[in-house]
Length: 593
Image (cartoon, rainbow, N blue to C red):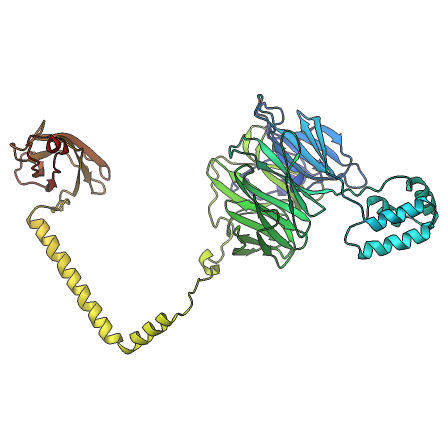
């Protein structure tokens, strides 16, 4: 992607010092006229040519019509009108056939519009809901002119306040009219059947049967009717339906639909519900003290942003792990994933013009912007792998590129308390055995300490005696001379009559290599035969393990085994630097014969 810098004076204030930052300023346009939120922002290779483009579901403020915009670099590539406000956008693969071009799904009102190659491909509409029977009866009476419009309005208002089933769009529009317009509206719509249609509130994707990045994915829809729907990627039929106690507004999914998946739904009642593949209703519930404003899954941790200006981390079972207080209100959240370094972090756009990046509780980076960020996404844009795209409250567009040399380090932002300070200790309950042991330690503490000291001294004495005996008998695998720090380990492999003997020789010094060593074998020539009784050792680099291999032939057919002694010597010296005894196993081949 070509880095085009704006000439506007505000661009100099996007970030203080570019040289000291991890980000490069690629583009800033305060008059881009893009108004959206993070759920309607997607990066995708729409044409399969490796050129990633930005898909924006624009809300169209100020009475403008909502539009679907596709940007290539800083310029708008195409625009198309939308019939209703967009709720979410997602890119997914529908099939395995070549070419592997992803499809674009845009949720708007009660429909999901699917595009391929930026052309309309399919339209999925949510199934209609049964109307309220009392509302249906009232409109039937109005159709037969048995009630007047004023009475119809009073009875519909009573149903809206008390009934559990919501009113249809037709009745809600009728209740908004003035008295002079009601009669004409009734005459126009009384012959039409009542239809109650729900709308989509959120949408995400779920892998079908493989976890690969280019695997086929299903669409997961959250509706105003407190339901979750999983759609087939090819036929667009409902594969699964799940019910929730409230309307979902944020979704996070992990796993595969045909294998096992977990689904977290943040709802309008301030709770987060956990569902699994075989559950029609929530399995776990996280009760928040405030309304959620964002939900991001980082590895196995659910990061929730609340309207109390805080980030909270939860496990999938609802256990709270940590809490971070923000300096301002959280406006939007999204995931930052740097796959080349195995990094996953959460980005939070704040009302004070900051974008903060956190890994768990650790602040990794702070990006300052001239206006509050209302939507953001991170990924491949154009041909740059790590691009941060932000839109501001005033409709501006900011594009930043992460430097290839940038490394996120914990604590790179501002200092704070250590993570262990907020961890609660899991204190066990005081059992009867614990109480009895405590009383015993109080009463006989001196005697217990003396017994412990005596056992400790005895253990040290036995260890010293064993070490001295090993040095005297040359059984130690570690060199006893400080001038030659060597370590030897032997491994015997095989069932016989031929065994493979591997000697692992290591130079344990920190900086000095060792040269001019010999390895010699002492053995009973009536029981064993070796190709070479001694050989030279190559240069030993400090810290590396050198395997030296040879073969041992067992000559006895009576199942007799013996010890082979290994000596490590220096050229021109007879005293060994290191020695070890190898207990050879009984030859299974000759014993069976």
